[in-house]
Amino acid sequence: MAETSLFQNALKQFNKAADVMDLSQSMRQVLSFPKRELTVNFPVRMDNGEIKVFTGHRVQHNVARGPAKGGIRYHQNVTLDEVKALAFWMTWKCAVVGIPYGGGKGGVCVNPQELSINEIERLSRRFFSEIQIIIGEGEDIPAPDVNTNAQIMAWYMDTYSMNVGHSVLGIVTGKPLEIGGSKGRTEATGRGVRVVAEEALKYKDMDPKQAKVAVQGFGNVGSFAAKLIDEEMGSKVIGVSDVSGGLYNPEGFDIDDLIAYRDQNNGVIEGYPKGQKISNEDLLGLDVDILVPAALENAITEKNAKNIKAR
Image (cartoon, rainbow, N blue to C red; front, side, top):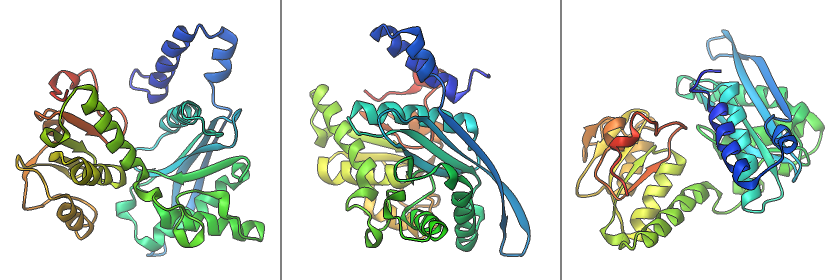
């Protein structure tokens, strides 16, 4: 595989940890391979009547501790290699915090910004029907991820329930509250980032109210992280970015105002008038105390790491 393979990077991380643990070669072998990989190619009817075929994946890395757990993302760069790495990491994430689940992940290679809401619904329902053969409350429980949300989880749950003939509320997490979702789920990952940021400042013996922050990625995770870091910690968020580019404001952004603008601007921050336009690379190099990488993986590389000024 190419050196940029995300799964190979994940394996390198695993083997470093395995060396520290003096893990046997037999156990390394067992944990180095996903238990199950499913790739599906499925047709979806577009609004204009045209049929397009999309490719999706669901990977279950390890289920020794319980059902596979992990999100499903919609992105034009989704690959099986990426999904394998993400499922791999989910195994460790669940184990480290003591949750009785294994690692799973899924994704569809699609740019959802190019689809209507009706096309996204048809794609979601068809994809979930295709992977349903390995999904179940005791087997594999998906969740939201990049470009997926509570509405898509509701479609998944409804599709699965129709296929089996009765309601199965526990088939996905991240659902709307009305059908069994959990309070606080939408902001949970961003809140986790806020907790880590505060602990990092404590470790550095820094006053949060004096800290400057940049956030790469302004989707669900990044926007909630920015909002909570600003409101609850009192830190100044001076840089943000998303797929449309970056923004810089040395005085700090009004995060609620920026979120409101994004939500009325096709989900992107491009054109926001209260900030200077910068590139994503510029954002990574801002003179800040905390840098939050809340976009896709491999944002920080050996090429740009030297430019990062965050503490």
